[in-house]
Amino acid sequence: MAIKKSKLYSSLWAGADSLRGGMDASEYKNYVLNLLFLKYISDKARNNTYSEIEVPQGCFYEDILALEGDKEIGDKLNKIIAKIAERNDLKGVIDSVDFNDNTKLGEGKAMIDTLSNLVKIFADLSLGAHGALDDDLLGDAYEYLMRHFASESGKSKGQFYTPSEVSLLLSLLLGIDENTKQDKSIYDPACGSGSLLLKASSLAGEKGLTIYGQEKDISTTALCKMNMILHHSADADIAKGGSSTLSNPLFTTENGMLKTFDYVVANPPFSLKNWTDGLSIDPKSKQVINDSFNRFEDGTPPEKNGDFAFLLHIIKSLKNTGKGAVILPHGVLFRGNAEGVIRKNLLMKGYIKGVIGLAPNLFYGTSIPACVIVLDKENAHARKGVFVIDASKDFKKDGNKNRLREQDVQKMIDTFNAYKEIPYYSKMVSLEEISANDYNLNIARYIAAQQELEKDLFALINSHKASYLPKNEIKAYDPYFQVSV
Image (cartoon, rainbow, N blue to C red):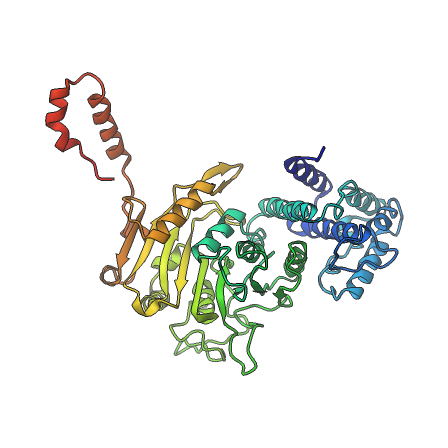
């Protein structure tokens, strides 16, 4: 009988977590996920099924298991990984983790015991014999472990992973589905482990989308590339890690312009303080003076806050018919000064199609509420307003985090696609009204909070109507009991 996914995933997590010792989860995840990847490619090659990775002799997972108790287990494991990396152009990906690092894994016997137990976690996991079934299982297991590591990684270090429900929301907001043409491209300028890109591509039919991504953190870039391979997107173009998208975007054209895409999705680090690293701002004019891509023509964001820097980069990275969805903190909706000027310019150009306020505590690394900015260049010239949704109350508790439910995502998508106005939830706000509010997009300005007192009052009225009042008296008062919903 096949093992239940939930049981498999929980046992993997329990085993991995128990061996972590004093190491931070943000570091330990790289060891665990690398080994899971090695187990996958080994089983695929051993079972003679279609394998995108060639495993040299002496480098299969059973060879790794044979190192149990070996006093040189760390060094030998590094050498096995180096051979696989050399054979498959995976340098900088699977060899980015040092399995012989005694500062993280312990000295002498401590390292031997830790690594010996670590490699055994995946010993009984059989992958590759059942084709797509195993691939789905492994891909899901990888996502499961990443989610748990993100949850355990603490502030700022869990940002490599976007919750799957949020990834689904962004993809659906862009209208990506099985009818999306296969030649469409999608880009994430802060791609983390690639979860946003993979979710969007998975919705676009069997062949998916052409994927592009850039991530500054080198170890996270490695995770992303492995994640792409596990999800049959080995041809995804994930840029080399180490470069900031804002100061050194790596997707450019032959004539030195930014490459543009059909779709852009992003969950960039919130309020990045060093976003100008590599860029120079003139102290008098406050203009970026060395950006050859002209990304800041609508204004220069504050030097200590990169929210609008990412948004402007995304807009410049969209084709003229392109669409985007980006997760940002609520401050982008109402902060003034330089950010107020940028927001006004983007609204006047019609780039902002919608704003959705999400519940707090949905994301790893932060508990603050975020919003989704929906961008649409194709219909920008005809834009008459911005559709606003307040979904801040739509979530379920899941441990110490909140999570979107399936019905929460569906409600947002149905409402957004139909521009359906619902009291206390959604409204089409005209550009005239936004202008009258000095281009402030704070959701509370346009969607009033539902008063609990008001709800309780009408509940009381209706309970009386349904109980002891005579029907003829109830009918007489019906006009006063009508409530618009």
